[in-house]
Length: 288
Image (cartoon, rainbow, N blue to C red; front, side, top):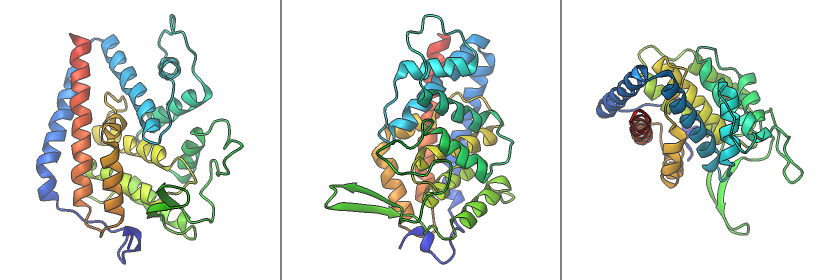
């Protein structure tokens, strides 16, 4: 039974007492990172932000098996941040320009309500030149009526890791998610909200393609809201990519289990902690 087939879906629950030490550690690291960047010269802050954005764009694509040219991404980031691009040998591509725009839209206006139109717009940004000749995916719209499965292995012997909820009723389920995201329950820890949002949206799998990257953008927005900080100095996607196999294993286990998502949140917070640790190391190198 998949998690969305549970009678009380999507009423998740978790052991917050067990998660408290991790929550405290992550908040301590967030404070250290913001403290170090506040003391840094403006140019150093820009360098750290640029590096984090480049990492985010490259790694969120790499998680899905897509490899972007680093030079093109760097050029796209420099243009979006208004930084000098002199000496850069490469120009941004439509793909890198559009992805960087998506990532900035996700975090630079964190207080804007998240809407279904915004989700579809972000998914469309992943395919700036359309779906291509070899694929028949819907761009900027919800997925079609075919069953949505996550599979691996040979074509003649595929292994089904997960099947998303049916197409019928998808809009209502997305609307339920958005209502929760925009008006979370009182007392819900903002970091746990980010982890829950990640699992919930990727389980809905609302698009033919681009679900992972769109979900990670939504997670970045949730983290920006949690920190009241639109400028991102760390890349969660880079930390996920470093644990890519475990990421998919944790998703599969959570999506095939009951509504107790404590193990998923343990993994999510651990990955967030690693992202912050790596960012602190980069900041120290920039300031050295």
